Image (cartoon, rainbow, N blue to C red):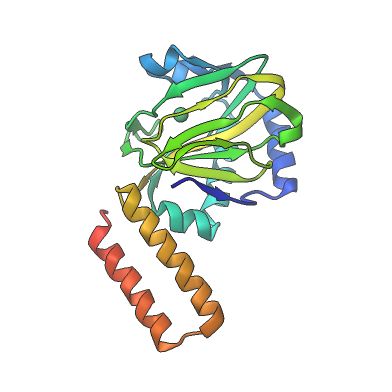
Length: 226
Ligand code: NI
């Protein structure tokens, strides 16, 4: 399931973060990459050791965690700190699959990457190219979202970022280990949760709505790993 999550950040928050990022030191994206991905990657990343990194990264994480759609779709167990990247002058990232296990750089915890998230920080009219292309069981998808919007997709998806031929594409990205490892089960729970929300809106706390909510929690109880 590829899920578009609108308005994770307000335009003011995007502008603030962009301004702070513009002042920072960027390093070659190859520094954070395994050997297969390194052959196809050409971009820059904000150095996680730079003083601005932690507060900016936390702002992105907090914004995602307060968005009910993100929480319902990802069911986060552990989130790695959001990172920042930028592409310009033909920069791109060829087809790859994200590393399945990543090490948290602060506490050295091993985190299984179930869900990948990209938060767009440039608006589409600022750059040409730079589409995120991701494959899932329904085919190939081309993603280019408004600044402040996010896309969530299974970390096992083959994906790439097309060359940026004009302007600059700035984004934040992160990985999360989900309470529910299986992408199909996560999608089922998400659909059920969203349907219950709509029913509750129409029917209030009718007995059937409460029963379905109970069903959701029983499934989560069966499938969640903590
Ligand atoms: Ni990737």
